[in-house]
Amino acid sequence: MNQNKILALLCISFCIFQISQATQKDAYVLSYLWPVYENYSGDKEFTKQDFPFFDGSNFAINYFYPLPDQSYVCSPPICNNHHTFNATNIKEKDYIYLEKYFLRFGQNNSQTSQDLWKNYGSCYNHSQTQYFHAMSQAHQKLNVVEALKAENIVPSEEIIYERSQIQKALSKKLNGLMPDLFCSKFTIDQEKGESYSYLRRFEIYFDKDLNPTQSTYLCTYEYCPDKIKIPPFKF
Figure 1 (cartoon, one colour):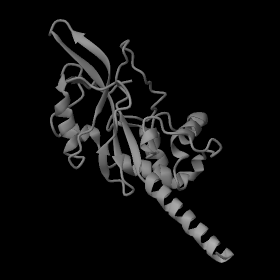
Figure 2 (cartoon, helix red, strand yellow; figure 1 turned 120 degrees about the horizontal axis):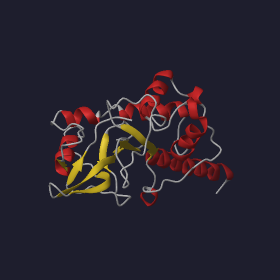
Figure 3 (cartoon, helix red, strand yellow; figure 1 turned 135 degrees about the horizontal axis):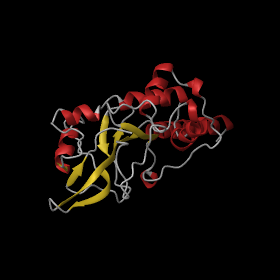
Figure 4 (cartoon, rainbow, N blue to C red; figure 1 turned 120 degrees about the vertical axis):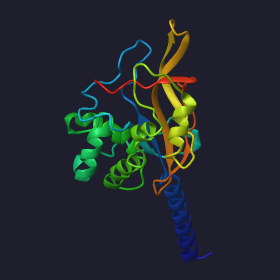
């Protein structure tokens, strides 16, 4: 085999590898977070400092990462520790949006923003501009608060909902997908004789066109029981 054929085969192999990598990593996992939940000690885990512009009009963004191999889906690898975050790479409209919804995002804490990019964005095949734009666009695909409100599910200190109620309400906005819900603070109401947990988060896969495709694997032991509370927004 002459040198030109060898080079051609190497080029083809490299291109196939790049295409397969792009196909794999042009899908995403978005974690929706309700930052008002309480931990097992009854304390709020987030403060106004974590979400300085959050107003409770939608669930927040816990994380957003390119879909890794299934073996890493519960613990996605850090791909490039030296891929530096630069806020100027983000479109102004996306930056303002993410300041409102993305956990601890913003110039007020540059180290945190760097860590967010390093942990979740550095596996992305494209630019930081595209990554953060994809994140904001994916999040806008589903307003969780409005989806729940349409089915008469609203944050409340008093009302306890069935897990299936919440899942079905979200399913109507997710092309029939039934997301797994993660909870915290398992509580027993002695007077009413019932137990419940606080809704914490859920995750959704998006394809490369940012269409929801399926729910993710359960990666923790925070799976919600049948009874759930969604505490009202306040910091």
